[in-house]
Length: 277
Image (cartoon, rainbow, N blue to C red; front, side):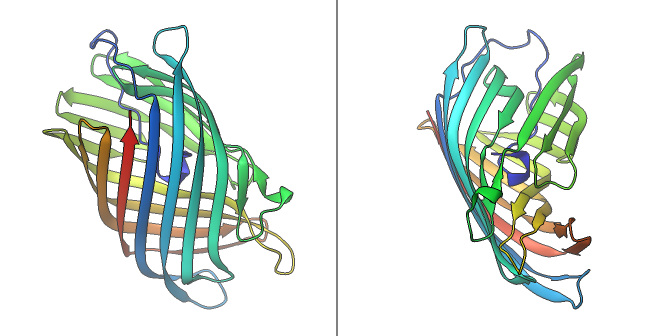
């Protein structure tokens, strides 16, 4: 999924030649659902409070290319964001899209990706005007030993501005990784027995076309969260992730109308289940 859907993690960069090649899963299926508490939105004619919820689904097939480590991928994805009473004029944003990408892997870790997400991004009415094709590009840049760089961007027709991706990844040792990268910095700890703890930031959302009220407009929804994610992986291919933290900012940017609503301080919980084979 796009970076701003919260399902693309920061790259775990590996020093050249440090590990033997390991093939990534050929098929991945993902289900994520979460809820965020109530926060007061400012920026409109009157303050408004409300929570939010989300459900995301994705399926991805991966096929090896002739050069070692390169893969092409195809799949489907869907996101639903619900705002019961928490966004003036909006109660739902959703997207249904295909996923096409070229990926580069080392030792089973993704260290480069070019992905496009052609599909419909809308409130309730899925018309041809809601068509968009967000693009994500991320690439690792070797620097020195355990320190590597990451650069890239995420952009789409309904985004106010392109989202830059840049920073440093420091693999301290086999159990500790520091991701000093924007927009999702993190400290990642290998807890052993196929479990991992990630402490850091996560951005969720995207750009959408609203229903006519009385005319259609574009809204970019962003939720930036800071918290902890515990992940456990089983040999059967099932991975479970539990996420909890605080929403540092919730934003609805109606940039074509020159107005923006924003709030912060709500707690959030998320459950993510992945099957990969």
